[in-house]
Length: 224
Length: 101
Image (cartoon, rainbow over all chains, first blue to last red; front, side, top):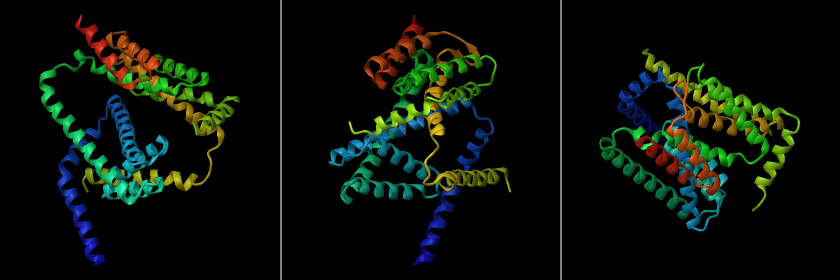
C-alpha cells in the first residue's frame, strides 16, 4: 500500500516535470537577463494580490461567523502560498495548512472546507475573467501609456506608503529614502537606487528609536 | 548535465536552505530591539524610493511628466480618503487625460 502510494507520487512528479519542461527552459533563458524594475513590479503585484486574497478569505470566514484578525489571516495566506509555490505537490501542503489553521481560528470542519473550496473557486473565476478581458482588450487598447497605466504602480505604492507613515520618524525615513533614490537614479543601473534607499532605515539605530517601536507595537496589539 | 538541470537543482537547494536558516538560527528567540526598529523602518524607506524613482524618472533621466502629476493627485486621494483603489484610478485617469491634451 505504502509502496504503491510512493510510486504514484513519484509518477506524478515525473509527469509534472515532463509536462512543464519546455516552459521551464524558456523561463531559465529569461532568468539570465532579469530586468530589476519589472522584477520589483512583479514582486509588488504578487504581494498585493495575496493581500487581497487574504481579505477575501477573511470575508468568507466572517460570513460563517468566524472572527479572525487581518494580521493572522495575512500571515496564513503568505505562508500557505509560499508552501504552494515552492514545494513539489505544494497545493496539497498549503490546503492542509489552511485547513489546520482555520480549525485553530475556530472554524468547524465544514466551514473550513467550505472556505477553502469557495476561495479557490472565486480566485480561479477571477483569473479566468481577467485573462479573458486581457485577451479581448489587449488588441483594442493599443498603447498602455496613453491610458496612464504606468502611473498605477507608483500610485499604488504611494497609497501603501501613506498608510505606513504613522510617525514623524517614519516620515523622516521615507523622505531620506526618496532623496537617496532620486539622487542615484541618473548614475546607477535600475534597481540600485531602491536597494541603496534601504539604508535610510538605519535611522532606527538612533537611541530614541527602539523605545518608539515598542510603544507603536503595543498600541497595534491592543484591542480596538 | 545540462545547465538547466544544474540551475533547477541549485534553486531547490537554495530555497530549502533559505527557509531552514530562519527557524534554525532564530527559532523561539525574540529579535533584538535595534533589529526590529530597523526592520520596521525598511517599509517606508523602500516604498518611498519605489514611488519617487518611478514617478520622477524615466530610465536613468529625472523627468517630471504626466505620470508625476497623476501620482501626486492619487496620493492626495489616498491621504484624504484612505482608498487605495481611488488613488490608483485617479492617478491613471489624470495621467491619461494629461497625455491626451
